[in-house]
Length: 199
Length: 192
View (spheres, each protein chain N blue to C red):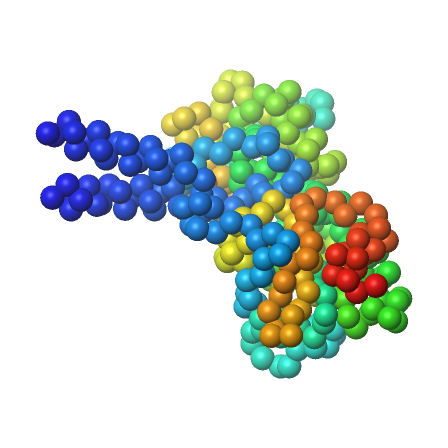
């Protein structure tokens, strides 16, 4: 009786804890990654739609100074890569890949802006593990998650969704992927979206 | 009674949470002296890669199909900064082996991209001009089969007469010096 009643709970637990989190396995991050386990795939609901003007923002960059979205209007296509948190498995396994495809972004006249809700010192330490990143990493720490909230990708726990926004030179949103927080978005899909844009 | 049942379920959940995942899935990382799992992979698109591995034209192949005495398997990811830094060293290792006519056909290298799609493996190949075959492991199936090792991870396999692959050496992280690494693995495999 006990087994029959508890079976669903046990099965759920097995599924939950055996759900593989293989990301962030680089020896580079050995002993430094906090694994939050499997999380609810998506929590927020962005009200932004394709074709809308991307909300402007200004955020401090890890490399110093600030970066505003409007700087790129009329000049570059822009990819915003929101990741949930520094020192977590999938996030640590996403930007290092973008770091070796600068040429693919340049081919489509696209700049990449990485954004998290972590503070600058945390982001500094974390991104140094990734090597020299060619793209700006921006801190949406204070007011906490304000830009993530503006884009509708701030989760209830105060971290951002894992989300990609592709914005064309006119400032219009051309692609949105509010991705399962537990997995990495396909690089191939992102590059195909960039191919659709005017340079 | 109800409390006892709840306590039992809670205890089971806690035990499961505390168990390492590799233990739960029953897969530990194979080590020296173990047989390497005879994993099945997609045949590389490049005819040159197929010729290097000595594969016949098929959709898939297993490691035991590779025509070599010693096989160096690198588990890597294009998203792994350590693997990115390591890439030139492994290229050097390939060149050193390739220049030695006594071992060129006996020692081969293959890279397996853990969690990488074919597109991502190609990005890595082009970025670092990788001269040896790289194959994708998009679903992490191979990565899981070898105990979800950290990357880069190297397995050196010696083919036995029955076609199975015996692990003669393994390590995580940099090979540091390709010449010394080669000497070490040849020594371990007794193929000097």
